[in-house]
Length: 308
Length: 248
Image (cartoon, rainbow over all chains, first blue to last red; front, side, top):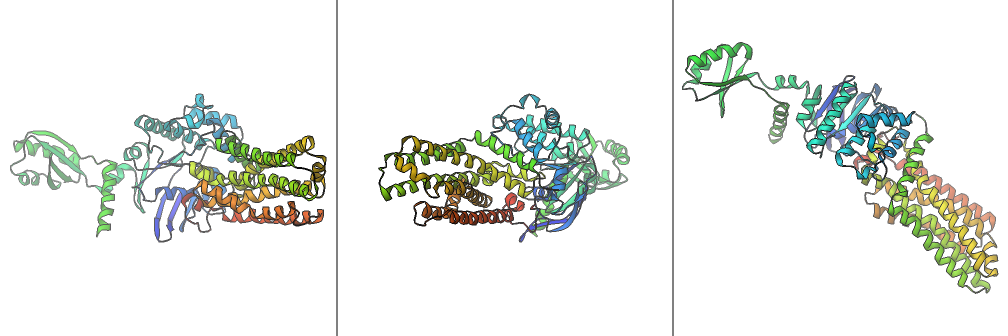
């Protein structure tokens, strides 16, 4: 999937603007952003439900255009936030309807395999209205797998699910990833993206960052070392200033954070300097920034920029 | 990608399955014919067989029969798109390769087929009851003139009109109940002409009945094209009007 300078405006309101990225075959691509950032609109645009205002895209190898809508939709699957099942129909009847819409052959076999992938073979005759929210989500995923999509769009697949159901959906996505399915996952659950995605993009109307989660951390945060001591140093400047490659330091509630160019080089020298200063070291480790830190940093920047 | 009857069949089959389990649809499909067969039948059986009154009673009774193909599909088809939107099933369906024409024809057939079946069945039952219990003068009045022809010709045409009005309203409304009321209202105008014919205000020859039927058929086809033009995926999914959109 290749997206170039794609934008969507609803009159004066900008849903998303100048978004460009690529997603490789078999990649799990996370699309993060706060509520109202334009994630769902982007998915709907790439799924040909909405026409872009400008820009271009290639989805599942086919250029995005009104004429190509049906061809693109036959090669992709979309699972919206709410799975949207016919509640008065059974699981099998729901899947039969969609197998017909995709004009699939070997309907029985495909339904069996899709239900097998989500471990729901024994619930095929149950009415969807009688299923729990987590099971409905799994039926939605089975439906999305029916046509062996080249790209699978999952829009907030764990929204509103309890922790057990969330874990089940995560396991399903992980198994799809192992099967080589290209997945475009929109979420605002950062641990979900960090755990499941090869790369993530952070959208807040415009695309703010894109890359592997560890790359984003490096891109956004300087490397640093956290030091925890039993008691504060009498003269921290004298201790830290004497260690080569320490660029700056600051005191934190739990100790000190030192900006460094290479933590592996600095750590031994730093330990020696602290011992020489009679400090009792509780811990000394490279700082770890989660994807959540990256996300919050970006969203905070946007809030500050809007405030200015 | 070309028009596919497989996709039409998938939606149609789903709709018919859904109707069977939908108490509201079942109630509408059961109550409407019961109501519209009970009233004219009682009226006919109780009628005395004298001159102009017979013609009027027969005309009125047969007019009741033609209310079925107006009311029933209006109520059912007004649910067709708005109901899917309300259930959250519209977006997954529109995300498949289905064309708008396929979607609309499937929805129209899902309202049209049961309506036609029930309306003709009710008319058949009405004729049978009349033959068994009504005065012979009334029975011969039913078969005189163009009454039967009007019933047979106008039942599907009125149903077709009501279906498209119902779907048109359904694509634009978010409230199913309001949509159903609007839809019944919008489907009624052709019934005025039929009423004038049934009550012999307009004297109908076979030729005139066929001409009027052809005109209604033309309106049905125009309504179908208008509904197809109104069908906008973007608007249905987001509530905002699309540009050229991925409407197909």
